[in-house]
Length: 343
Image (tube, rainbow, N blue to C red; front, top):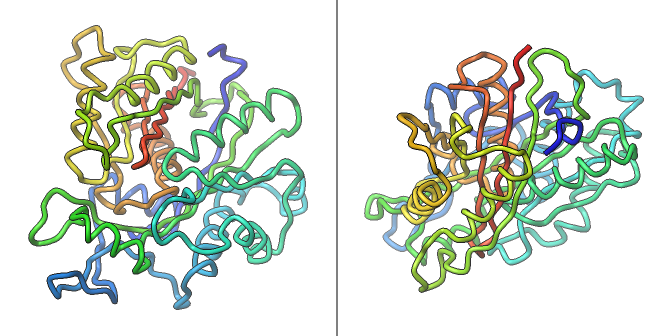
C-alpha cells in the first residue's frame, strides 16, 4: 500500500472484563491477567458456566447492555474531539454476524440509535452497521480508508460491541463441546466487550500507528466442516494484506490474533505461517488477547488494535511491523498489517 493510503489509528477505547478503559484493559492483557466468573447458566454436566463478564454498575442485559458498553468505548476514543464536532464523524459499528447463534433480535435496526441516545449525540451521514463478526473491524477499516481517501470525512470512528453471554449462544457452543470446561480443554471461554478506534489519514506525527494493508480470504475447511484444514483462507488473507502493504511475511515482527483457545485456530495459524513465510525467523511471537478477555466476538478486532496501539505507545512491541488476523466460524478470514514508523 502506498504511504498516502495508510490510515492512522489515533485513539482507542476499550471495555472488557479486565478493565473499563483501554489503558486498564491493555495493562491487564500485557500482564496476562484474567478475570473469569460464574454466569447464571449451567452446562449439561450441572456445572456453572464460567465466562468473562464486564463489571457494569447497572445490571443491564440485551441491547441496553451492548449500547452502554459501546457508548463507554466510543466516549473514551473521542475524548480529544469536542462533542460539538461528533456530528461530522461517521460511526462504523461492528456487530455479530446474522448466523451467530443467540444473536440479539433487532441488532441491526436498533443498536446504532440506542448508542446515539446513550451518548446524547448524532453521527454523520455515511455511518453504518457491519454485521460481520470477528472480521467486521477489518471490513470497516476498508470503508474508513475509502472515506478518508475520498475526502468524505477527516476522521472516522470505528466501534465494535458483542457478547456471547446469552443462553442460546452458550448452549449452542456447549452442546458442540466448544466451551472450555473441567472436562474439555479444547475449548474457549466466552466473553463480552466493546471497543472503538478513531482513525485519520496519515499525519506524519511521532508515534502514530498505521494500518498499511488489509486482506481477506475464505476457508472452505472451517471449524464446522469435515474437510481437511490447509489454511487456504487465512493464507490468502495474509498474502493479500502483505501485498496491499508492499511487505513480506518476514518483515513482520509479531502476530496478534483473535485465537481464543481452540486447537483448530492455533493449527490454522501455524499452517498459514508455514505457507506464507519464506525466510526463517528466530522469533515470531503470537499474541492472543482473548486469553485474558475471552472470545468477545465482533469486538475482537478492536481489542487487537487497542493492544497493538498500547504496545507501540509504551514501546514494548518487539519491532515496528505487526501482522493481525481474525477468523469467523463460517470461514471468513481477515488480516491486517500495522506499522510504527521511525520518527
